[in-house]
Length: 83
Image 1 (cartoon, one colour):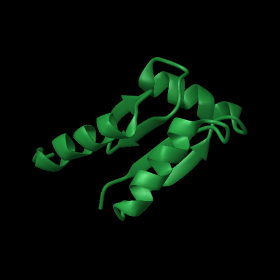
Image 2 (image 1 turned 180 degrees about the vertical axis):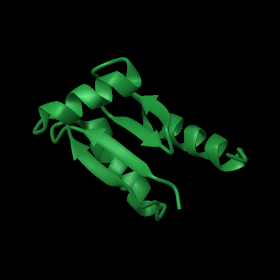
Image 3 (image 1 turned 120 degrees about the vertical axis):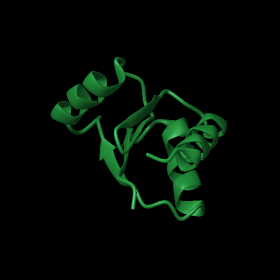
Image 4 (image 1 turned 90 degrees about the vertical axis):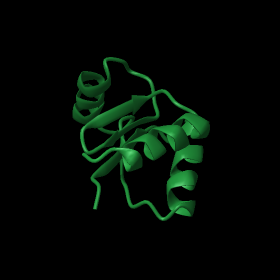
């Protein structure tokens, strides 16, 4: 089981699309609303090097400021990787 965290904000349309994509593909994830949690926002910025959402972290691999096509390619690449 992969550890999937989605850093998002409620008003972010790309965040909604990312959540829908993960749900539709049966990928369990933990949503972290950086708009409500300043410490989580700082953690996201530390991990990604930027302040944009959505940011997804899968087993330590980071994809920031993405659309669903980029998310799909990122997850496929991780699935093909032995680690």
